[in-house]
Amino acid sequence: MTDSGRYSRQTMLTEIGEAGQWKISGVSVLIVGLGGLGAPVAIYLAGAGVGRLGLCDPDTVSESNLQRQVLYDGATIGHPKVVIAARRISALNPDVTTELHDAGLTPGNAADIISRYDYVVDCCDNFATRYLIDDTCAALGKTWVYGSIGEFTGQVAVINGSSATRYSTLYPDREALCSRPSRVRGVLGPVPGVVGAIEASETLKLITGAGEPLDGKLFTIDLLTMTTNLIYF
Image (cartoon, rainbow, N blue to C red; front, top):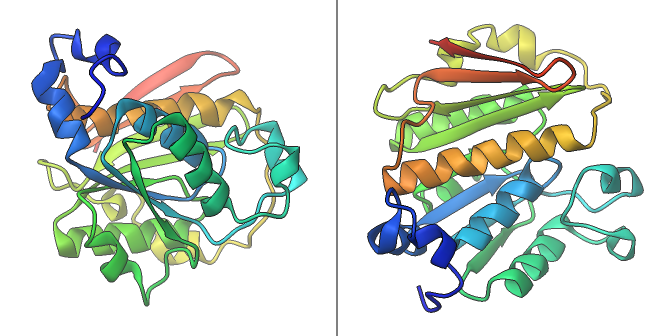
């Protein structure tokens, strides 16, 4: 932490304070996926001063991303997402170190990549990667934040925290879910912004010990009806 003025609105919170800010600046977080969810997660964690951010995504920016993926603009179309995200983070907060994983997360590299970070934030868009994160984090004793979106809805949970709950407990039908054919789904632009912000908040709560994380609890929200639920699992 090099700039107390930068974090003043955060450190004046009793639940954070200077001690919490030091924790934030000393921690490392891996963000898996830099799309609609990963964009706000990256921005808010960088703004909060997380010391080291791992950026994991094999994709490049496309025009259809711009409706909801707030890290990017028209000039970045065709460029690797990890490169543009790192550039944006550096401009926002030079205190933050970024590490780029442009091959994405695979069975061959997951253990090596995840082992380098204190926490993992799931911002991907497929079941296979989530189960890979779940298995790897369980093996390595890492807590991770799950998030997903679709159309007008979203979900967030903290996995493998103090309650030792697993994603496979929440969604046990691994084979059926992973075998579903991939298809493009519509989504209202602000939905990933809302859900990604909640993922970032849960991550900061885990780091600082503030509040009650969604540990073993699934939070759901429907922005079309503004209905929320909290499900214990």
